[in-house]
Length: 79
Image 1: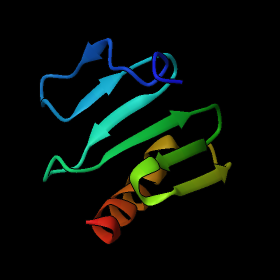
Image 2: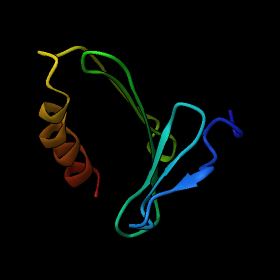
Image 3: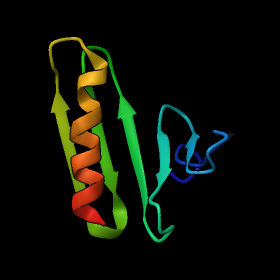
């Protein structure tokens, strides 16, 4: 698990990285790390281990950008 959630590729914003099929996202305060697995057709797994939080979305209308507001709501609620 540790190797699959290690960011081997880091985005320029310094907040996002990518491991083995997991996006690794640090919150703006740096005290929480979120892991997101994104699948075809809007399937997502959102994990925040420090909060024992797991959220699963099993699909949407195929518009992957439609999940952006949902993720922002999750991030805002956690912080």
